[in-house]
Length: 221
Ligand code: SAM
Image 1 (tube, rainbow, N blue to C red):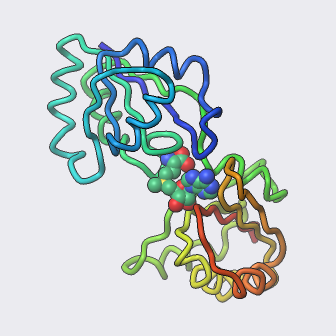
Image 2 (cartoon, helix red, strand yellow):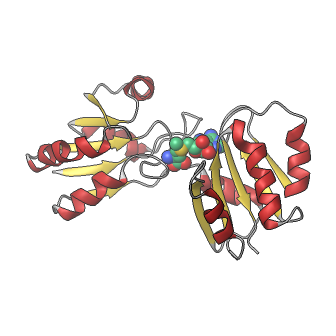
């Protein structure tokens, strides 16, 4: 009876630990956000295991069923499409319920996008706040207002089509001269990190078609 949370690569398939591979080989079943995406990874690793769907849309309903399986003696691994489960991905509800029901859990250390983005930024990494995705509509301005006085380095996940709008809002709330960085396509072929003031980064991306996965890091006040 145990739930493992197993980080998977955020791009480069070599970024999976030996222990992650061993755990995926040992468990009774793997819970995956998207069974097709994870099927590709499992195939690449040469692992054949039952893959069950566990995503944000069925998280609430599935938790009790999975807890029953775990209590029945099963060992399960939860993986997301990329990176560490529970980090802007499903996982938290299951972890919380397992802890409540005395089911052992263990999260393996491994890939997640915000750590390399923070370190690559060159901004202070001793104290930081991970903000994940900002709310799209309701609560967005409140969150930004709260962050105006934030002295720690701030880390945000963002989609390419919202990048410019978000950077412009950051410039409005934090000031155009605030140092920041944007890391794109971490661990992938076209990985890049753009550093500068918010205004300089806006100017850089304004002339480009923005593609790929993105992490924004902004220096604290
Ligand atoms: N669980 C993941 C983790 O541990 O980082 C995050 C999943 S979240 C649904 C997806 C977001 O993570 C993307 O929109 C992007 O902001 C960030 N991300 C994931 N992979 C990335 C990569 N290779 N390069 C840059 N950002 C990435």
